[in-house]
Image (cartoon, rainbow, N blue to C red; front, side, top):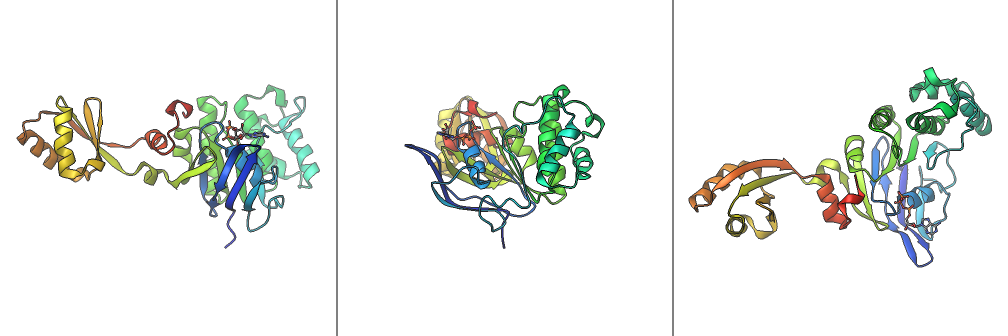
Length: 298
Ligand SMILES: Nc1ncnc2c1ncn2[C@@H]1O[C@H](COP(=O)(O)OP(=O)(O)OP(=O)(O)O)[C@@H](O)[C@H]1O
């Protein structure tokens, strides 16, 4: 099958600097794939290589089985498109439609898709940042793509603008469009994407669904005797499943065993102040996988 996105050993080197390192990226049809990593991780460079805007140092790119540069069926928003500020959103799209040989009747359709019908006749310069971004997506949708590539589509948007963009992307996905988007915001990919690839220093360090990346649940125990509790629990369930954190322990263990653990600890004279199951945070997973400072990612 010709996948919408399929790269192999994709590499880009700028002088001594390895911006993208042997990237293997596959996106099957209909998926919303989040390409997640801190600033400078190599996301934009990868997306630019997919679109034939940057030549790879080595490795290969195929979009629908075709070499980069053949962008039939592919729409992209990589950096803010150059819209004319004094033209309306609608007129700007008509210029692009004419330029790309698209039926101008499509302009009304894409404006509706991005919820800009009411403001289509207003000058671009009067648009909010969120509206400008949505017009950018509308431009990428002009040719009715089967694959949409979006670089940081919510960058710089306020919470309402971000929410609108999430709704839009999910709607496009529901209509069968494959979407590959990059982001440095964990919360965002968590909410939008079916699958996530985590990129760090040019390498894809993990790839999975959000749920699987989180790796299920953690049992958290709070006690005043953390060290003694940690020793005992390590002995019972294996040291690799126990992490001491401050006044508590995080255990990778079947939550069904919570009452058994509680009983055993109390029997050993360890007072258990609190015991609850919690989901691992994607931010924590990200940090564990990449060693990147968590503050880099939202
Ligand atoms: N034209 C270039 N010449 C030299 N180095 C570059 C060039 N383009 C990108 N780089 C470097 O390659 C690395 C990856 O950059 P890239 O823009 O792909 O990262 P990113 O993950 O998209 O981050 P951001 O979200 O900040 O754009 C960075 O260290 C960057 O400085």
